[in-house]
Image (cartoon, rainbow, N blue to C red):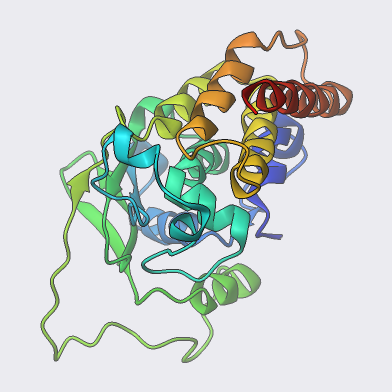
Length: 266
């Protein structure tokens, strides 16, 4: 099954993974498609860490004060990918990378402590796997969703001439830098939410969707998106057992609570 809607996996968590056979869910996200390809280079016992790459979005290098002043139009000006409004905004806030962190844990059964995020503005290295011997295997291709989509549909086989490869006859400058989680706190929060499990990821996702909508309506500032998510997560009291009903209830609670918080801010 080629999975393009990561939110269904993230909010469903073990409800989804427990129903799937090993290897049945094939990711379409470029980062997770890259990891799946890299994992072919060794056994699970040989994996030391997964390294998700992030473009950094349009606000890479911004301070917290600068983020408070950005506009919806600026948030939609992604430097690499052309996507929809919510996903593009999530990329700018790094919420998308937080969701992908949880997705990587669920797909590959790797502890959160062994999943890292690094900023790679060129978006050519889509993700990497570090093995216990010190080797790092990376998947490189120009940013084009044709490749992960084709792989998702044909996995484990490859189709012919799906996209153009990197042109090795030309010079390339690829940069990597650490993510400043003190400014872009969505990844730190996602790691916390993922470890907590239960219906916390559903709250994280639902609160974000309401906050993003409010940001584009001019009701809140960009930096308040992550703040509203964290408030919802901190206030959430999950059921002891994860069920479909508890997920749906948590989502509704998070949306209602976040909308109420937004109304107070207006």
